Image (tube, helix red, strand yellow):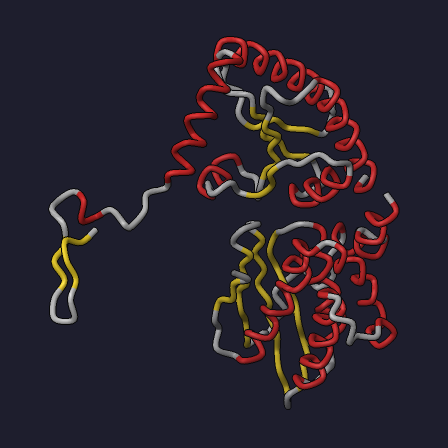
Length: 148
Length: 152
């Protein structure tokens, strides 16, 4: 049970049950859809960029607790950030959940609760789906991303 | 399969041999034969009876869980139980069960339209075979309760 609790930390369970920014924000001008075809997880990220800063962001979709919580906490963590800052957070987050050892959880604030994911390789895609989708939305091409 | 090959020209064998790619899967054929002998040795009737008993036991045990919905209740179905739990996504169920040594399949099982038909994003599915036991079903049930408790 102990490493299961590492994966399903209280903050993750909380965000999965009560996702933040779970809506399409008014004025959103960029959007992208992400799919995790093997799981059936699907997420749509909406955002509004103003002078390269993410002013508004929201998401909709369905998936497991990890993917929902990751999307919810992603929106919280990149709101008000520039695209470069958001990209930098994603890179650190990605390093954290894949456990490549280059990421210092202290740099990631609340997102550090996802450090348990690295013990569950099949769940890495759940944690990163919303982030890949964010990146597609920032590119503004309205493309659909897939983890496969 | 070919008849002859030179730098200038390749001549393929006649039908149907031309569609045989090199050495056939000989080890696989021998393995399949051994598997059929094994299953016949145990007896298909005995296997079916035993698996049906497991299915009945598991269906009763799982049905007693309040927040469960069993998907697929055909009378003559094979010994599989697909299910969803209120408030716990199938993939989270899979991870939690795996932690207790119970391997199930989770997801849309390559039947996305069927998931839509039942109005579920995914299901968890336990497959019972003649090498499983009632004790293992008890472990499954306990692990499901653990998942419910964690997400409760």
